[in-house]
Image 1: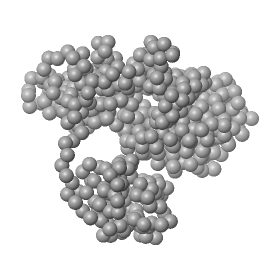
Image 2: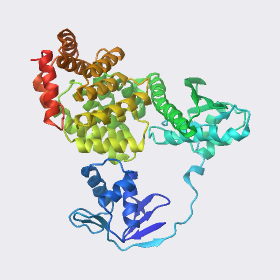
Image 3: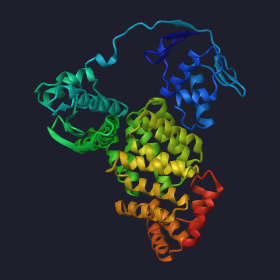
Image 4: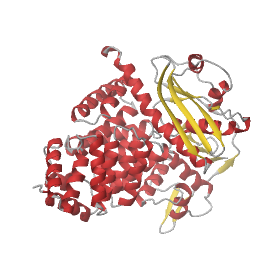
Length: 516
């Protein structure tokens, strides 16, 4: 159905808003909200209605809801003062009050049917997911392998770093013995995901591997053995695991490719890949190296949304780990993050970058909203899950924070930031006064990485609250090594608690640990 009003056309089938024939970019959640308001224009839509329909009854702050309403108004050239099309009904909700004409949408060929042209080797990478081979000997089981393949394809499509070839093209090779290099040339891709499914009785074995078709090498492979208690739950679990594993492998491969190029020939994509390799190492020197590379990439392409979003996240990472001062970098980080969202409002990295800025500048409600948007766009984005967990902790929602940190760990068990996620989970337990669990999680974080400040902070305050003076002294010594400028003043002023009681609890842990 198409809804026409003023000079706008809202097409529910194409999921597109146009004004005078020009597409108006909208975040998916904002599009859903606008479509719902227009379709229900005969009545006042309450906040509860919107939360139920758009957020599936999840807990949503008023600021998150209002930000989506404001975004819908802005897309229509409306605002909260004039309320020409979207009217706020005090204490009741919202109503779309424009004159609307309904039309049946014209049928167009779906974009998924278009076969990709072969791409130049210097373009950003593309990936194809082949139909997983049914090894069960029963043709009736084809559906399960096809379902796994389609779910992986859909999950990868939410990652905006590379193009994903549509099912209609990649599945044409099903049942045919074709070399992956030929497939890559015909589809114009650099990377190919293939796999197999063997189902017997109540068990299933799924193998998957990521191939670099250019070199013929295998970048990653994994095998999953599961009991089929719930076939759809197993399918979802394995899909998420594969999708979460593939993106960092492609980043690593692209960085290796860029490292082989002469510095003078590096383009913005190459610079971004090099920057990411430094970003994930999480050291002060790599933080500075990533910033320099990202600034070079943005110098080549000022509207490079992905470089802008990583730059914002890199700035805020440095702030949280005590490597740089918030006041010095916050304006540039916020400008970069906002520009990234404008460049591509459906890029999860852009929203994660903006959320990290809001988090560090004490706008927790806005930060949570941005992280939720990032996860709505890409549920397999472990970094956004980790950031979300951290923001939930500082917002006083420690149980939810611990659960989010555990999701980040499960999503990416080989993640370079695994130590940080364990540290966040430890802080969540500290806020709940579960100090022994906090200590165990902090030690696990340190086992993964012994040079990060967050785990030593959790270890110090938890040891302080339990009265373990020897452990507290050791943790403080390591913390001063990794963050020489640590002080009660820094803690009280630089970390964004929503509740004064949580801040005081943390400070008390440090006082008992012996921090002056």
